[in-house]
Amino acid sequence: MTTSKKRALTGLRATGNLHLGNYLGALRPALELSKTYDCLYFIADMHSLTSNRDPAALASQTLDQVATWLALGLDVEKHILFRQSDVTTVTELMWYLSCVTGLGLLEKAHAYKDAAAQGNEVSHGVFAYPVLMAADILLYEPDLVPVGKDQKQHVEMARDMAGSLNAIYGDLLKLPQPIINEQVMIIPGLDGRKMSKSYNNEIPLFCEEAILRKKVMSIKTDSTPLEEPKILKGTLVGDLYALFGTGQQYEDLSSRLQSGGLGWGHAKEELFVVINEHLRETRARYMEVRRDEEALKATLRMGAEKARTIANATLHRVRYALGFR
Ligand code: ADP
Ligand code: TRP
Image 1 (cartoon, rainbow, N blue to C red):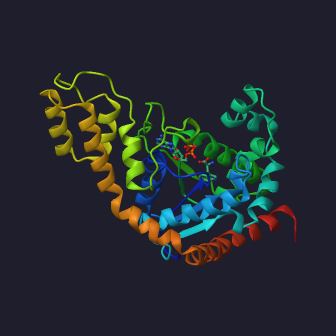
Image 2 (image 1 turned 180 degrees about the vertical axis):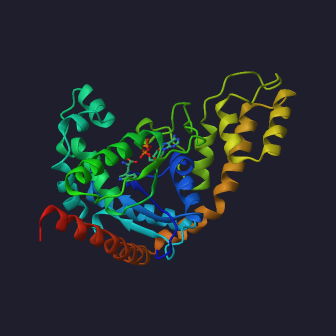
């Protein structure tokens, strides 16, 4: 990353199997940016600790995510893929930011407010989540931070925290811009709600064909009899078909449904075929890459080294400015 291109950074927590919502809403748009920007992608395993307390699962899900990035074609020589916990100085910057961040700002965070509203006992980790996220961002001085809508507030809070530190100590940290891809829709899950691990309605990104087929066939449809005409548009099957099939394929399925004689079962079968075709090659690559854990760990070591170089330069400057001379 020695080019003068702008820099983009994004993180994804290591939590369970990635699904098609994660793929279309986060992974694919983030990868798209690697054509134009120098990118840093990291696995936010420290953030995962607010909900994941299973060490073996965390370790394995971290490698799943590395394999996913590689299978999707990320060039780890040109860009940086690393694990958050490999650059522990992020928690040092977190402390500096904590000292200039008011409780009032943190109390506004949606995630904290939701957890508190449910009457749950909220850990300090959940409360301080936005400060760690700000440190993640500010440490690497990105120009842009591509995130889903749900994370926009966190990037704005990172800007606030950088502004507070800069106001006291001089122009120290770069203020990043969030970029929200408004075109990326919320991908619906098998029951029509947002596809999410929390709803157990997801279609996994990489799973065996038989499981993928079973998932797709379980999509809820209405009970219009086989011979009746059916409208594809506006249905869950239609929405998913539009995401994976070509425009031509969509028109074709739509008109055959409209003519009657084609059941939703058939339509779902065709939906399975287009999703499966779309994922087939990447899935095979994933299965292959995932097997070689030593190679995945080596990829992480290479990324960590590159990430540390950037992080150290930032911290060196910050420490001096704070008076640690
Ligand atoms: P989940 O809801 O399954 O726990 P996460 O909250 O871990 O997923 O999401 C990780 C990333 O994937 C976020 O950037 C989020 O915006 C994106 N994402 C998750 N679900 C969807 C969806 N159904 N549609 C579009 N993007 C999604
Ligand atoms: N909080 C993000 C999420 O839940 C993950 C994340 C952690 C992140 N640190 C980040 C995203 C820094 C962008 C930049 O999806």
